Length: 227
Ligand SMILES: *Cc1c(COP(=O)(O)O)cnc(C)c1O
Image (cartoon, rainbow, N blue to C red):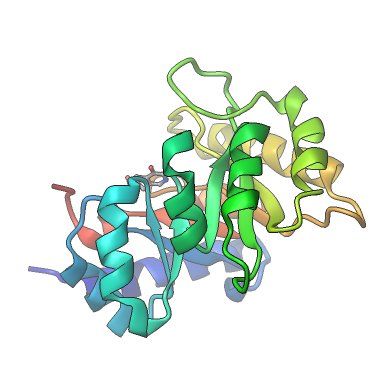
């Protein structure tokens, strides 16, 4: 059976190729290994192979993994739906949150971020294809929320995240990513300098990288089928 180490090497190679084809430095694209519903052992194997960033979408499930790998200094990203009763644990244990869509939740994370920790890195999740089944705010609402979140001292607004509808053609896949990039360029300012586009998954990472993705989120292609 092919293991996590081999999968990681293969995916990093594919991401680097996609970056070079887009005329970008491979180092400008960060791989977020989505370890939701995967056991701690696989996280440890990936970490041993040099993987730094891990993504989870359930607080309960993530906490034991975060605690049991604490000595490794990994970077943990929350990418799931945010509920008010879970914000404390997220503020305490995560380094990034990609799924901000409401000011109320951002204010709770800001208030609950422990003193002595660096600001929590956050992205606003944009419902780029206006799908009922997906979280995220409408593009038109992004500037106002960005301005408000940008004022919270214990959060650091880094950029935007999206999860577009599935498309098979490369040129079609690029469109929602281009819109997200343009939205980020529009919102970014000296006061709120955005440096992150969290976009692209297993089937559309190349299109996302062509449009400027700085974080690509990949799970099963690294870790295998989820439980
Ligand atoms: C699960 C998940 C991924 C990774 O999905 P795979 O199909 O396993 O690559 C990426 N982004 C988000 C927001 C997810 O929830």
